[in-house]
Length: 455
Image 1 (cartoon, one colour):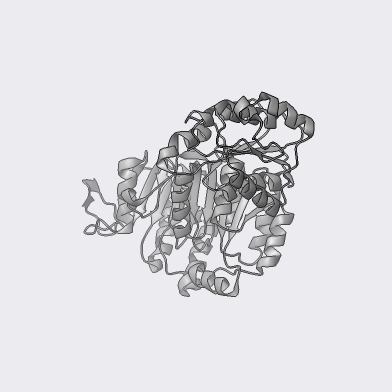
Image 2 (cartoon, helix red, strand yellow):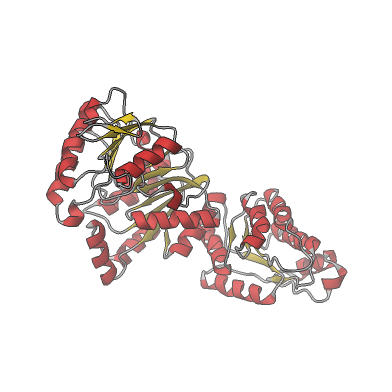
């Protein structure tokens, strides 16, 4: 099945628009794409009429132009007929928003639409889903545009069984500055499943990291997914729900998924090079880090800070994740000390972490960063930047990011994420240096690189 027309359609029919309720999900989808995306739109309702001055077609087969994508938002028992019409019309794919299938004990209806689609090799996403959001291309989420928070266009694709989790992650991607290439809510994943999307994204030039929120796999789905993952050269991050007996019961009622034995699945993920995120913090940290660095060997961490407490917390976090924080050699410490400002030469602690103290100035941070980036004793540099230190300016992040660009070694940063420090954060983000709002998150970014390098 060719999934490309689903994600970059030039024409779209929305089946199920209301002529009297502009808040109907189909109307929300129709209106936002009509007004904000470069897609030729066709509204469909068996009653016909007009909507926003446009002709409402009584059936998708009545549309006089070609249709790349059909969005179906009608009652479950009507979906099969519309799919048949799509196939006759030679529509290239569909998103089935409608619920009322397997998750509502109507497996028969779900089996019916799958059989129709398989016979014609007609791809559809869903049912019981939000569908597709591709920045600047298409948005089938039935959420008003003014309520959505979406990240900038970027390198991370995310596939989710839950539409709610997906929307929430997009909000957090936007907050963390993580760029998005594609977001797909697959709901019951009756036909198009994780494995097909993984195969598509593995070849997608716009995507560098592929993330999944998974509730469970059907019969033999898990095996096919990990086999597809083994062939993929891009980093794959998975966050799994249904780890406990209570969670398994919840996912079963949500999307009719079989959660399976979590421990076994987790071990298999590891064997097949899939990076498992245990929670949202790990997912965000892993995606941001891996979208910037993908081919580096990371085990030994060098830490630079202006606060001894921050350095100690970072060391503890590194050790908890089996990352080493090696003591720098005496010769390296002496060389570095001689290069620092005279005012901190006698008070800075340079063993690793490098505590430059609150008296350090910008040149000290730049000198320490250069030394760490050039050191053979360190694989990855973690800078804990405290924006309130009196000796630094908002340009420091861009300055040390430039140093990292010239080095063949990853740089990761911690900066508290508040508006007042936005310039410092952007100095890293604009230079493709991952920056976390927490020390734990910054260490997790290094952990992602360690686990990626061991795949």
